[in-house]
Length: 299
Image (cartoon, rainbow, N blue to C red; front, side, top):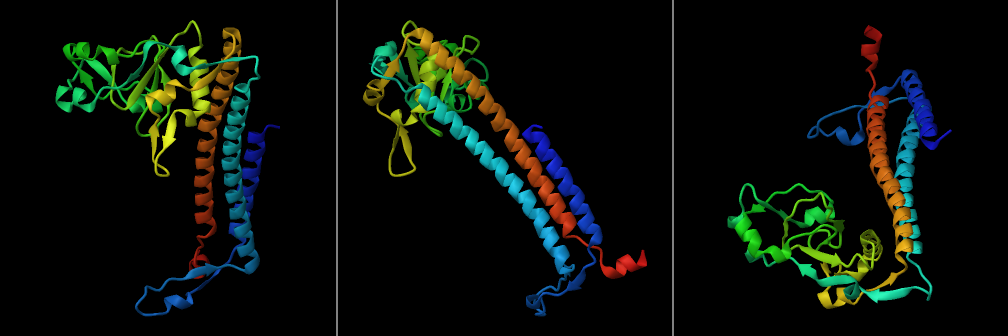
């Protein structure tokens, strides 16, 4: 039996148990001592027999524990992925190491233009799209801003090309996305960095995975939690192990599978955690909501 099926059976057993406990409870209603003051509204708390109270607490604890285990499983899977990714990038002395600058095309390091080059008054309803940091962070291609062709021509140095890496320099810093041949031509803003690699030397996804694995190489801390993208001279000096292209592709294929698995888990487990939390809240309400004694007697 798989884990999911086991958890569903466990939850069904607890659902039945919760219903049985609810039917067995015949609570008294008492006013808390701190609610006897006339200045406070009076309310009564249902007090079923102590064994029933204990059983209710036990059921709710089981819901809480299951949610905790699901959360721990999500964290463990992510840590497992990060561990294996790092192992794949561990090489001996037989592999050549090159600086990132050696792997870039000429003029392949492109930081976005100054903000004055992309003022809001330059934006139009349709035209050449502006790539923002969110396009690197979330790897999506929904655009908010556009400029006309004339202004885009003046900023063509900042135009993305297929197989560029774009890196966020603002917001969540160090996130990376690949420009695909299907993506629209567009201009990066000041919150992005383009790395344009020489693809005769490296696989684009190999470099992406490597920089994602060792984000500390391109991100610097400044005053604790505040981070910034490293300076150009530091990024260009980053040393990267460069095995043969065939080996690079083998590593990429493995990490692609890991990445898909982690994404599936990252989408599935949070949804299950949310469902269990709602279930917990429902049964907590049901278990702690009783009919008053006189109402039961009148039925």
